[in-house]
Length: 451
Image (cartoon, rainbow, N blue to C red; front, side):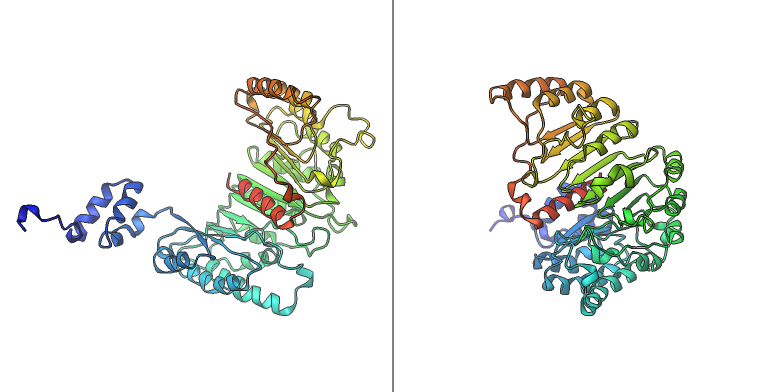
């Protein structure tokens, strides 16, 4: 073969030259170049190319897990671990994985992600269950948090109830709490009407001097905690409401003055209030949880099996300066979903219409599981206009099918964007499959956490 006919031997390019070539490439082109041949691939896996790299690891994929242990554990800055909390096989993998994360200085953020958040009611857990959780999760997490040279900046316990009860121990284990930027301790309860209450030493939170995002269950919130966290640079506070003690002295709620001081200090904070399977709390929401000075910006009412129109109307009056988003999601088969005007006789207007009228910052209205009148939808669109970025409705009480197209066109014109009902947004199985409902709720919590 003539020399002129020989193919270039690209794999023989010196590593020094390849490094310089890779430095000039965009991230997308760099990945493509790394796929050219085996000799070029190692050049790609260098820390300078992965400064803010987030890696999502699914324990169901053994090849991906092996790849993480071999290559990515020393490059990723933040790791999301997706696993099945019901799977003993996955739990066995978690312990060595979390110890690996704890020993990788480059990893400063950890998120746990599982849809099966309630393995068993915490009050019913046997000693062996607690021991397994402590050995597989809590012990390596403490090692991860205790690092001082490259301290933890983000910890998301994935709404797993059994783990959030170790919140005090995990905060106490932090080597450099002043470096923590995000902490997620809110959970989805196995039994929303009966569960232990987590208590947090407020002085431990006070040490988290850089904390920007905090997620807690409502049972943990009190006047002292609200006062303590005012020293933090919070930009987002997420509160999850499950049950409320029938004896108010056990959790008297948060006072108007505490919320007033909080609102004065955090004038631009994003405050997300989420009710999750709160079958009892939804009935007394406006009396036990909501406060006039509470600067709530986002409200999520998820599968509470009741439309408390009085609470919605209360918010439209007292939170009209701050409220930006309202999501009501329920299973329509549970009840008629229509407004019970017998109970709320003073309400002559749909509460969502009143919100659209009174709440000048309102940008999102999402309603599933409650039948909307088409005329009220038009009224909402007229009141909010193009300020309303999201209007999502799945159940509409049509007078005639022929009016559908006219309604879509009018609302689309008023909103300045294409609009139509979303009948397939929530599959019917959500009404019966509690696992799917947990998944939906979990994704909603994660969405609010990340936005």
